[in-house]
Image 1 (cartoon, rainbow, N blue to C red):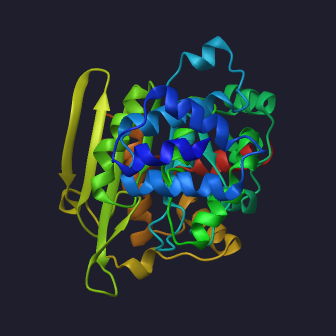
Image 2: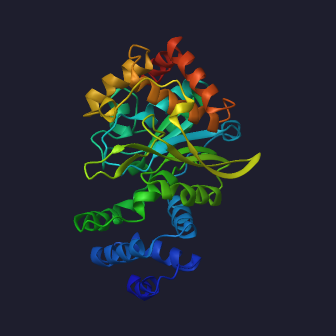
Length: 351
């Protein structure tokens, strides 16, 4: 019973590996009540999840996902995901998805894992669908798309059938105003098992622990970021789950050829135009798709372009396609201006 784990969590003790496996089994079992699942998730969140617990939950849940049958040649390449946890509630345009498409145009294999909007008005699935890019690919179709086009969108509900038994408990927790471990888990469950990740989180103190989780999951190259923006309505700083052109970005990163490193990245290092948070706010899927198309075809050359290039530059660096974020920025700008990204959009729409 999940109730047996509540005293452990109430004492502030971390769950053992076996206890996590037991909890996952209970969470995906229909016979366990929604209330019992919600009570467990609430107690775990109130204790505070350790990197080891998050990694164990991610590993067990990813093992239950539908695998993507990649051929050996594709698996041998660097496979990238560019993704945010969501939760910053700032309603910005889809910077991660735009960056992912630029990376695909650069020849990087991109397995984009995502969903429809949950905490924003337009999720990655909503945007790609509005751009005419298929989002309901089967595992076999995704494997073929990655092999032939270097890009596939892995629509989370299609790849994680076990989540049907967890969703009601998540909704109950949300009704109670309680976040859960699943706020962190989404980006960690990519069934293509990417080797490189640019992952955004909504609070800077999450960067290091989530990067540690990625290490434990076997990711070879990663950057976990949280960017500061203008002060919120209460005078407190607000944060983007992206690299920010508006303020300093906390970065936790690791690569095969060098160790773990945490730093703060200043926007002063980049040729940014003056920008405000209002410049980056998006809307419904059709609206965001029009913005994305203008950015990716080079029509929009304003401050939104800089935000996209900043994140694309970091993603190209993480994927090993550029030697620095600045070099990645320059490569991304060239790909947009030379029409390579527009061409990738057309090819993906007809795939």
